Image (tube, rainbow, N blue to C red):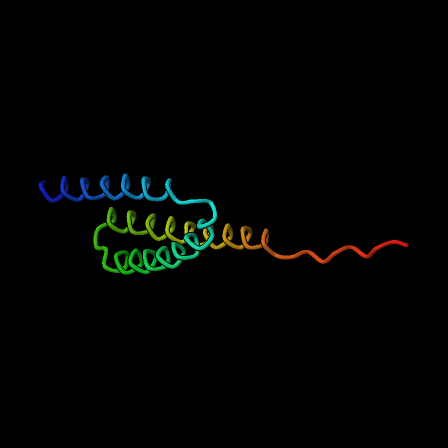
Amino acid sequence: MDSTWAALYIFLLAAFTGYEVISRVPVILHTPLMSGSNFIHGIVLVGAMVVLGRAQTPLEQLIGFVAVLLGAMNAAGGYAVTERMLEMFERKPKAARRP
């Protein structure tokens, strides 16, 4: 039971720390930070797949499946958002001048 409370404590501490760090990022650094976090999401996804592969009980399999599903959605969504943000910085060709 003690390890469950320790894991919950670590999870909550990481969640609050992550929120505080991300909320203080300037807007100009958001795109590079998003690209870096997509890399981390890929690592999390691989870790979730490893855990799912070692799951033995139906509950562990369900939790592992949900972890893989959410990790995949997070990584794919992060890349989609990064792509949209990078499109904002592309130069548009100037319209032809009319005489």
